[in-house]
Image (cartoon, rainbow, N blue to C red; front, side):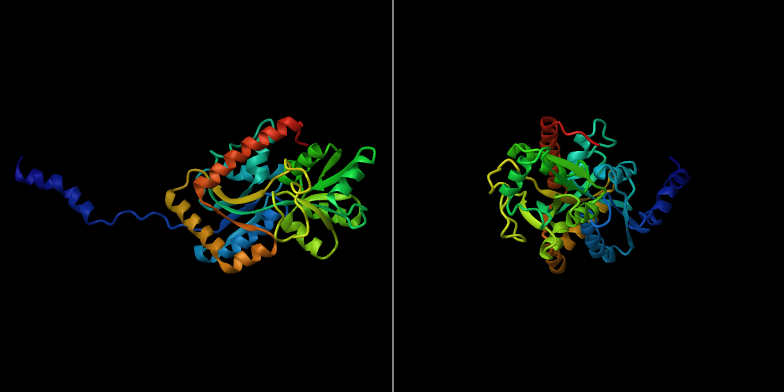
Length: 324
């Protein structure tokens, strides 16, 4: 090949070698939307705001917390499922939106595994059965006896249909052989307000939300849903301790974002969440509301969700639970 032709062919490579590689867009490049798929005042809202506050500074962009409740958390989750590749949209996934809702509804609007990137388990805590202090039952046994002695049993409220608290109440009713009528509210706050006001005798609620009212004496706890007693309520037996070993459940919340994200973004989120959960001040705040910080990364948390889907599908089918 003539020398002049060889030089011309080499020219693009020479030019390319002197040109810097195209930089990837900085992330995050705009404010981050943090979707809370339950109303204000619930456990998802509380944990989301604590973590958003903890992680926002380090990421260099504001985090805007946005409540998008509905359908047991599925409305907010569907927002992320339809936004594949959006690196500025995140959520607090939960048992309701990713472990129960997708197997409760005949047609789920999203795949709880494939349509998300699950980054980390954030925290766990039990459900707690609470009653108005005016209810004569002083124990779980007394409450169940009261339900047996009344035509139609007793009602219990929760913050919504298809939540962990709802299904925990279903498990308790089945195990005890009593009738407990579920009354779903639009969030925890109105359910607890009615219990404190005497409009409903009992509420099955997440411990972090019920705890301030228990400490203030506005409500009384009769039992918790994990195998052992909770450190925040050392005088309250678990349902298992009270003789109902089958009535065990754990509320779990995790950090998830959209599917199809670059590994670098996922890794940065994982590092930010892990750093937040290791912070002594945040752990102290979690302990104060009865939350145990999570210790699962992407693979473990995704596997947890898969196992929960299997478990709650069986419970829902056996109990004949239907969405509202």
